[in-house]
Image 1: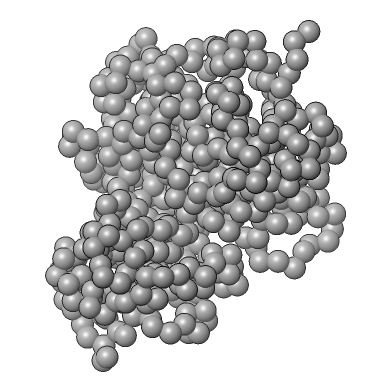
Image 2 (image 1 turned 45 degrees about the vertical axis):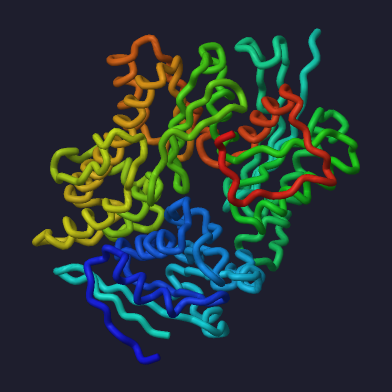
Length: 144
Length: 359
């Protein structure tokens, strides 16, 4: 799909309804954008749309969080990963993401994909989101 | 002479690898008279690498816990043989699965070979128990206790009606308080994680120089939100006519004022929520634990407010030595579990990366 730009103040719902049809099991949703852009907020909106009862909090410290999905025909769990603190790219192996991606119905949301760029290049089914801050809100670029 | 019980604690839930030995004289089970001694407490990041590995640095990724765990356990058991232990205590969660597994497998093997009881504890229960390592706190420890747990990864208000009985009554809905410190510092051009730097700069700044939001302060819940502070700090920073580079040696007064204002906002939210919860649940003690509890202004503000508004409620802060991740607190939580008979068979224990504290 060609990239498209979605202009929005990040209230989430409109954005998520555009995004949701692009997401399938074993998809990686890579979210880029500066600190405070709203990457985690995006994942929270997505989690709500998927019927996740425990709303995701920032995974910056814990690195990986898993949330069971109730209201989706094929996505069974959302894995929320933050590479912000990944200093050396090879450290991503410690997170065991390959195994998690192989599990049934896994959707992986990855913040700060720039920090694991080489790893991400080797993955298939990547949807990229770029959030830019603007004076009137946020501009979101989606590319898959 | 009464016999001391010895606990070997192992912690590998996230970044740190830690091993400790705790000795407890259980005069009256879980009463206030326990004599507790930390005989050893090793935390990997605090040990120079050549001491850990005897000069040979293993070729592993920086976050691998395996060589660290082996090294720390070997050093510990050299002085405190496994035969002298009464139980082995390990963190089961919450945390990173691959990291937790390293500690758990080490504990499993030790328990299987030594035939000692194995106790799995929650990392957050360990933080709670860190306040109990302090003798003055133990002497004043009366339930219910409200625990404010603040660190880089957690911001939780935990109501404790007894040992091993917890209810989370409030928590952050997005970023942890420590994360708010660290990321705001980054937005002002400081190295990540800059939380401790903010606290240092704040001593020389004016807390009313800038006005940062106090989200959810009076919403009636005990939940908190710190994510919006990043946006507020960014907007504030970008609106400044002059934005100096951050100079570690000679920081501009602007950074001190920003730091003091930011710190005031975070502390006000934490303290107000804690005070309101302490009143509602009529607690007899308020414990302050986790890495952010090293922050002097937070300690002093909470203590002052307690003395003023709830003078009969004890203030129970962790010693600074045990606020960040360590294994002495894990061993202490293990002692609580041991007294309740909560022991797990080594062949059945597993990790719980998403483990909640509430039971």
